[in-house]
Image (cartoon, rainbow, N blue to C red; front, side, top):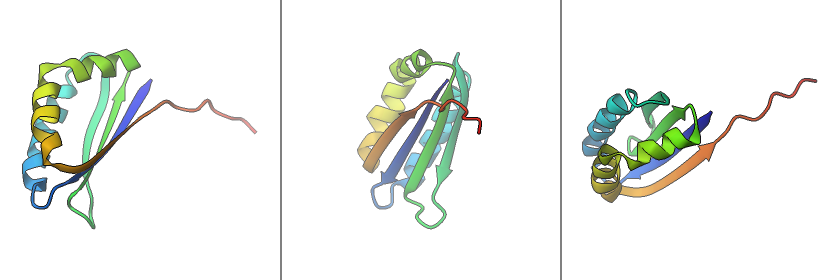
Length: 99
């Protein structure tokens, strides 16, 4: 399993442009092979804060997702220039510890 958490902060006033683009990205990404989840969250106290939660069967599936023309055009080409900051964290589940 591969998990990705992307924390974005839009430039002032750009959240209403960015959110529909990310909703489009999420709907299409959920149809990709290996995608298990793609959720878009918006901050309740700070509407410019946007968090993406993505889940893939494998790291290779996430890599393939990033190589799609849709990701290149929507995320890198359109969304990223509208952001003040962007942090992407790739995660893997820790093994269960039994006490």
